Length: 277
Image (cartoon, rainbow, N blue to C red; front, side, top):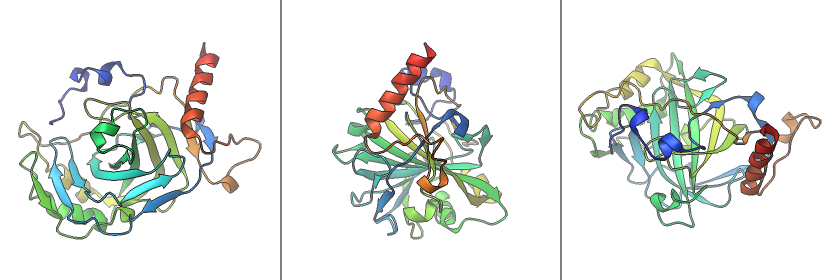
């Protein structure tokens, strides 16, 4: 499905939802948290039969191996990696700063057969948001994806095998224990409010030339996708958690959030509503 050019016309939850994404992420608006470490199952292995697809609103790498999955990090179970796609510039901002590129690793709760099924359930989807800053040096792992862009750039829905091996782990930042966590939505229609977001503040380098090459992708109308990020959405009364290692936090200031994330996020959100009203 091609992304409408004007987000204001998306309708449904995109217009009326209270837990929409993306948002601006700041430590000042967050409570401090501690979660168990993430467990990245088979992330260091190359994606089997990886396909790059022009979706009309991004370029996407599909994964068909259910063994590539994520758990821990406060997530309520195991989540299977479905696909990875990019936004240029970034959708989330850090203290008002927008980055050159943002990667979304989209997972669905393994208790549901498909991403669509999981997206109908609150917190049925887990997305990792990885930010990229512009640097002089190209990113070799992004290069694997861009080497295939020319094969799909003009035709929406077209897929092509990646011309090199790509391991999801190589697209993650080094610091995987510090991140923002909140309940939000998908950022394209129908903007289902089903997502547990994890956004890492540590960014990865990518060259300006590489960012510009993503703009070769054309949408359903035949126009170049010069940018494909959704505008920032209000936090409203949601809980925003800044998770970090225990030894990096002040014991006097830290709010400790341990397993049972769903109940805790709901509780913190409820308390926020009480305080605001």
